Image (cartoon, rainbow, N blue to C red; front, side):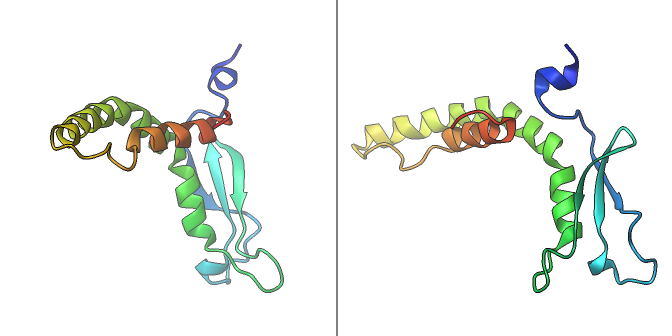
Length: 120
């Protein structure tokens, strides 16, 4: 079993680059972008969605390329967030408030599950 199979996605780092299909005289906001890992294109972002809709392809490509690092950082942050939420919940209980209205830990775990294709 390869590492990619175990983690379920292509290992980072991911980078962006201008797709080869771009016309060299087109303005940058009309470029298509490729997301590359290990020298291979793993995804593409296109500036034209349909006849009337245009996408911010460079911004979308940068966000996608940051995904492995964001996922890793979120996983590492969960224990700290859990600790902070427990302190906050204790303070709320001491003041006879209800539990805090949201859980950042739950939101982080749900986002990780979504990224990994797990049921939420």
